Structure formats: C-alpha cells, structure tokens
Amino acid sequence: MGTRSAGRPRDPRIEQAALAAVRSLLAEGGYGAVTVAAVAARAGTTKPALYRRWPALPHLVHEAAFPGELAGELRLGADLTTDLAGVVRGTRDALCDPVAAAALPGLLAEVSTWPDLHAAMLQRFAGVFRALDERLRTAVDAGEAHPDARADDLLRLVIDAVISGVLLTPDELDDAWVERLTGTLARSLRP
Amino acid sequence: MGTRSAGRPRDPRIEQAALAAVRSLLAEGGYGAVTVAAVAARAGTTKPALYRRWPALPHLVHEAAFPGELAGELRLGADLTTDLAGVVRGTRDALCDPVAAAALPGLLAEVSTWPDLHAAMLQRFAGVFRALDERLRTAVDAGEAHPDARADDLLRLVIDAVISGVLLTPDELDDAWVERLTGTLARSLRP
DNA sequence: CGATTACGGTACCCTCGGTAACGAAAGAGG
DNA sequence: CCTCTTTCGTTACCGAGGGTACCGTAATCG
Image 1 (cartoon, each protein chain N blue to C red):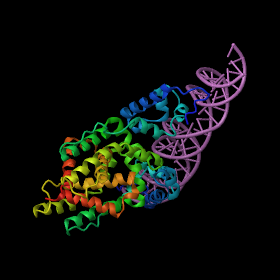
Image 2: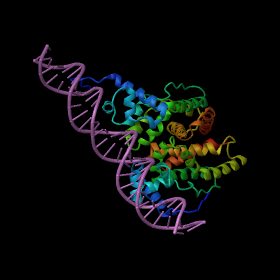
Image 3: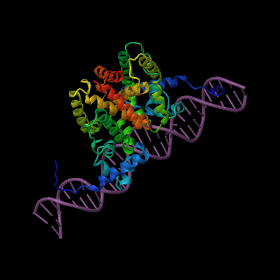
Image 4: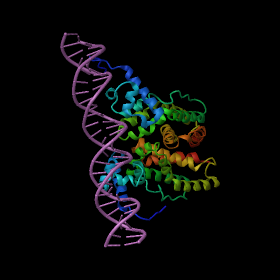
C-alpha cells in the first residue's frame, strides 16, 4: 500500500492550495468558474500537477466542497420532532453553504459519467444515518413512532428535498420551509 | 408578432428532425452525447439552423425531453392513498423515461446559467398540482386529511424525491419504492 | 552515487459551444 | 416575368476548456 520507497516526495502544499482555490472559485463564480486552468493559476501550480493528484476535475471539486462528514455535530436525544428538525436543519445548512451549493449542480451532472462520485457523496451522510436509525429504533420501541418507519427512507427524503431545493428553488429553503418539512415528516411518523 | 410578410419561410421539417435527433441521442449516449454538431448531423442539417430556432443547447434539449405536460392522464377521485400512489407513480414514470432521465442531470446543471429553464420545467407539473390541490381540499373538508396539508409541499416532496432519485439511485425507484413513499406521505396526511 | 519519482513548465491535441459571412432560395410587389 | 427583400442552409472560423506528452530538474531512498 503506502509504498514509501524512492523518488521525490509529493509537495503537500499543492494539494491544500488546490482545494482552497476550488473553494474560492466556487464561492465567487459558481461551478462554471472552476476550470482546471483557473484552479492551477490560483493555486500557484500547473494543470499536470493537479491531474497527478485527482483523476478528473469533478473529483477535485467533490473533495474541495465536501471534505468530510456532513452535519457531524448532530445531537439527538430530545423530543422526536425536535430531533427531526435538527436533522432537517443540519442537512439544509450543510448543503446550502455557498461552496456546497455552488458545487452541487455540476457535481450531480457528472455523477452519470463518474459513477464512483455518487457513492462518495451519499457516504457523507453515513454518520447522520446511523444516529437517526438508532434514534428511530428507540422511538419505535417506546411506541412513539410508527413501526413502518425506516431511517433510510426518512433521511433520503430529507436529502432529496434539500438537494432538489438547492438546485431549483434555493431561496425558498428558509426556516419556515424547515418547519413545514419537519412537520410533514413528524406527522408521517405518528404511530 | 406573426409577421408573415416577406422572406423565405422556415422549413418545418428541420424542427421535428432536430427534436427527434436529440431524443435518440439522449437515449443512446446520455446528455454527454448531445452536442450541437451531433444533433445537426443526425437531423440532416447544420448548427446555425439550430441556433436560429433555439437560443442555446439546453433549450433544445428541454423542448425535446419535456414536450408537454407531465403525467397528464392522471385520474383522481378514488381512495386518497390510491390517488396519492397514482401521483407518485405517474411522476416517477414520467421522469424515469429513458429520454427524460438522460436529460435531467445536464438540464438541472444548466438551470443556474439559464434561469428561464427552471420555471419552464416546474411548469410541466402545473396540471398535476391543480388536480392534487383540489383533491386534497375535498379530503380536508371531508375530514380525511390533516388540515395542515398543503398540495404544493406534498407534490414538491414527490418531485424532489423522484428527481434526486433519478440523479443518484435510479435503480432503486421500483414499485416497492413507490409503495414506501406513498405510505409515508399518506401517513403524514392522517388527520 | 545511482535509481526512482515527482516536480514545474511549455506546448500541444481534440472537442465543443457559438458566430460571421456568403451564395441560394422562396415569397411579395410590381 | 422580374426584382427586391428576407431568411434560408452551408462553410469556415474563433475562443475556451479538458486532458496529455515531453523535457529538464530537483528531491529522496537504497
């Protein structure tokens, strides 16, 4: 694996500079402003140096816009509706972030040509899924939730609504929207 | 307006040939295969002839993939859950059509650069919305549905789930998926 | 030291979206 | 039938962008 053998080591500053360059370009000009030449210029390097680190532009954008777990600071354990609202709000906040929102349209369009991207994107929600799954299980056991409730379907509905909302009507995803979606989902969970 | 005055009239066969060419290219090679040159070649014409009829490529793709109202043959009036299932299934069928599914990723990515496209796309659901709105109103009056139910939020949730599903996990949108989504939405409507 | 590897840089190929310029064709008015 | 006007379809081109080949050099390991 980590063949440390011989050769000039990769300059670690280039990777960070490229990711930062993508983020600033996304925030300033949207996905269309992120060209390989622009990233290389802003990062103070060249195109071949980028292609040595990422197989193609979408992979670089994905790593820059979604570097880790989404909504990781989730804290469940309160009232079920309150917990649900936290999931909805956290998902919305994570995907409405200017950098993430700018990256989403282009990234989703490239999913069809780079299938590995789609798995990597949904992977970012694994932590949220585990937390919600456990929370839902205890709620069902306590009789607070309908036994047909499935965490994967529920979380997926939230993700779908946020993603599609960011793409089509980003201005409507305000706090009232969070409240309405939370209410709908909470009503669907009643035993 | 319809200034019929002078000049050579536009050949009506080209428009149809171009739309058919886009549809076949979408079905065969996805959005990436739809280039202006490829459309012109398959339609037996040239690029400028296309740019005289559509302002840009996404507009042509949109007209080819979504020529009219979606799920127009909707028939409501049965049990509320059955009607809901019809809406979910009809939306899925319309957007999972090979041509529409291939056009969606690229089209959604272009929405940010051509704002007129996004309105045109959501417009395709106007008929479904009116039908569902009226159906939901009578259900609320009859006490069959929760008074907080809103047709726009409900339909939007369906559209979001289908769109995002087509983009990320098209293979999972089978009949069992329709059933689960319908069940969730129906439970959320209980009074 | 020698082998290996990645570095930075330039130059290049190819594809694609979009447009300018031109001759030909079709209708309107005489 | 002739001419004028308008738009036709076509050829050729431009600029931008993704991606790669090649080269001389620099850094690290054995």
